[in-house]
Amino acid sequence: MDKSNDSGQMLLLAAFTIGFMVVVSTVMLNNIIYASNIASESNNDISYFEVSNIARMTDEATKAAYYNATTGSSFNHTVFSRYLENYSREVTILYAYKGVSFSFTNSTLQDAYFTKNGLSSGQENWTIIDNVNATDNFTMEVNTSNLGDISEPFEVHALDQSGSSIWFMKMYEEGSNIKVNVSNQTYNIDHIPIDIKNETYQFDNSTAGKTYSLKYLNSSNVIGLYSLSGELTDGESFRCERYKMINATVAISSSKNKINVTLPVTVP
Amino acid sequence: MALKFIFRNDDSAQLHTLEAIMAAMVMIGVLIFAVQATTITPLTSSTANAHIESQLYTLGQDMVMALDHSQYDQDSQLKKEIIGWSGDEYVWNATHYISRTNSSDTISGPVKELLQQTLVAKGIGHNMEFTFRLDSENTLTSPYIYNGDPSDNAVIVSRKVVLSNNDLANPSSFENRTSIPDMDNTTDFYNIVDVKLTMWRM
Figure: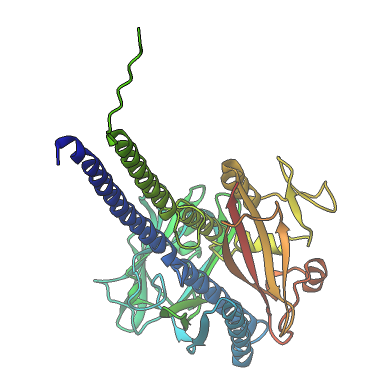
């Protein structure tokens, strides 16, 4: 066979080779696109967003149930439980439409620490509130059993916007007495609850006309309750209270995932 | 002068032409296959849609999460929006969300501003609906903001908000206005409203 007759087969062979390479690269590209699409859709099950929504609703419902159970009289456990049962039933039905099962159980009321989440292991140095213009009420009632001595006192600080302390109170146990130290003056606590805004503690004098934040230090040493209210710099009123805490346990499960979350909820 | 034609018995030109046609057909077949193969993606009409949906979903989640934030014993902006709802349906008229029944009734506040600054500014179509249970068997979805039917690649972000009696100034008036009923007369528990934000690229 002479040379001119070979060129046809060579052309055909080259066409097949190029075609095969294009097919292989196309299939590989398609696999990459398919895999990335599957990956981008994988977050549509129980996402962090759903968990955060459930945590938020449960926190709000527990606080509202506590408020309902304490309105007008002492704590009514029947009202509290019934509120949360109704809440649980409604959320369960709403999530059932999405193919997700939901169950909710709550613990009994417990004494709360002054930490950020109310647990002894919670963050003990934390800011209660920022951008305060004026505090109308600030009281606290502490349990002496956990209060530290003078070497590790519980501290309340008012900080200005540069972070400098403009007022602070140190609280500790000495013998069986509670003592507080403000501006190097030490006072015995005779009355419980402690009214921080009492003239003796110079809170108003130190904070008047300033924008400040309130911060707790070493708060894992203190069990008790506190209440403060007032006005923010934007004119909005605020109220921060903590009397008790409840552990709310939520179980969420879909066909793929199951999540159990226990949320410490401080009330009211 | 007489013309002289010389005929050669040679078929190589025809063979070359035939081979060229065959090679071209193979190449065209491969190209058609390649174009068809790249459009095979899960549940989407193009390769880019899954990523666009994912971006919209994240945007929507961030928006409703920010609106549902509250602190210091205050109601979230999303809850305030539900509590203040007149029960009407609102549409965007290029400057405001106006009521379908009363054009002087408009939405104002942080929810409107957020929707305007993010979705309207980016040209993203959006609807907002409130879904709630009417009784033990029935659920109702009421449009709050309606800007048209969403496309096939729309995404829905939903955020549930718990309502209590003490959130509402007048529960019976609220129910008459919005049709959101009190699901529990024995306690302060009122209802749960599922706020659904539907978004799509136009």
